[in-house]
Length: 85
Image 1 (cartoon, rainbow, N blue to C red):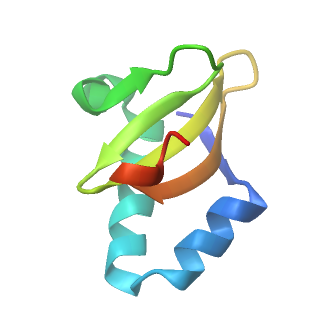
Image 2 (cartoon, rainbow, N blue to C red):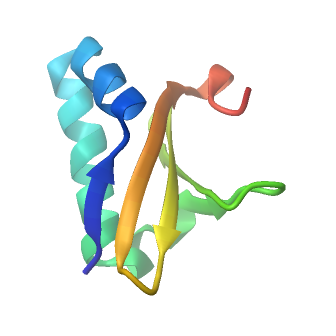
């Protein structure tokens, strides 16, 4: 199981969005942290970055995964259209 940390930008975005959507996003991140193989279809390595993308409905969670420290650092949470800019 991975430990989960949220960057300041990600926490700020989650606080501003509707509570039910924020809960869904956080539960998907927790599900990935506990069993990465179950969420494998929703996670993709991003080209040109040392980051991964987790799809949660119309939202994208961009995170770094450090296998040596077993930590997932959620960098940003954005709507689908603006996630990669």
